[in-house]
Image (cartoon, rainbow, N blue to C red; front, side):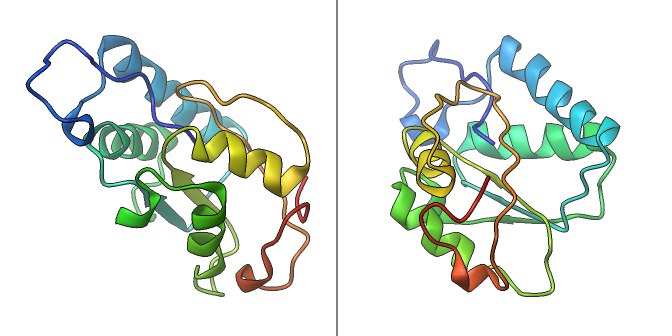
Length: 146
């Protein structure tokens, strides 16, 4: 998932510190509601530690009703390339069958294309569900998903 829309109003904040704007605060719970309706239950949520991603993660988890999900902030996700994101995925614990990653573009759009072979833009608050044809997370590679 790409983080929801961020606020560019306070120029004194660094990119890392930018929070969600009003639209982002409304959009993130909608994705959580979708997860709930579709009965998508990640056991692990890995988020960029950037403020807008942290807020997105909390709002999605709350709206999805998955308060028991393990939420971890991974600094490698911030400004990550698709290859770096694949490395993060490859290190997910094997007892996790469904994981939710929350981060940024262009890495997430590029990751979607790398894993599925389909070029699709991921706007803010976009969610892509990717089924990986792998036995272990460490087997993640190009074109292993749909």
